[in-house]
Length: 333
Image 1: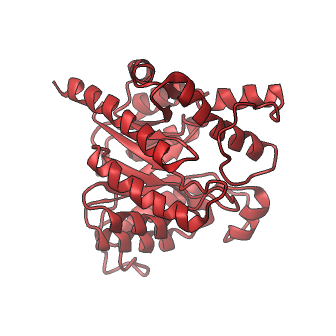
Image 2 (image 1 turned 30 degrees about the vertical axis):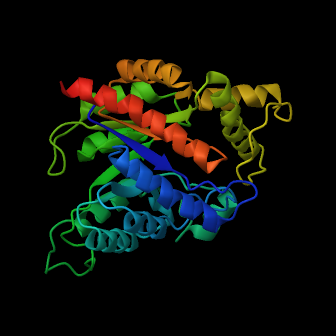
């Protein structure tokens, strides 16, 4: 493993505003930079009261301006929602403002419910144009071609690193075919993780962007001084995830020791979806992260975690950094 990174959904906690959530993201990014996190990504979600990163490129600019060296990017932009040229211009502008620090992860899902997807989409054609859209976007960010009828300004020549995100074999196959780095969303959809990584590594084709496969996996984190304290903090995410699946998205709830509002079958489903994670004291988290890394051999781990209290969230990611920095150092030795 070469690096450890952080995925932030800019959670809006109950009792707080989107403005507070965005301020918390900037504060967390500053701390993450000091703790040795390699990159700080934000995700595109829409029509969700508990997530403040809908205008993802704008939030990336906000976080990049609050930091100095950490890479900042999208994990990801849901490309079917956008014209490739617009994304090339947005991220070309970000790369111009913050040279050498911007990443662009691309997803194929809408990042929302279907009614909102219809409100977002350029069109509702059922044809899957994702591979063509990715290739178009890559061309816009490549060397400027004066003969091209359409060019991205800013964008052309910025060579913003593009990643393919996924939670199935589709993204793994596309990333391998195009020779791009690959990030698997195992922090909320772990079922196909092993198969996707195996497919990506076995079928990878070297490209102008990447000589050998580079795979990152998402891992949930909820760390505290004791196992019991961490498990209590994690109930916020369990509740939020369950309510979303039951069609009742809202702000991130405060921790609750009683999860009886979630039907048993739903709670089991949620716990399975969030099973690629480490919850507990520093020692428990270290053992769990070591096991995940040993099993899947990622080039990079991206931690994520929705915790209601900002101070507790900072402490959780500080513990994660302490554990993973040691593992990176050992891997490099």
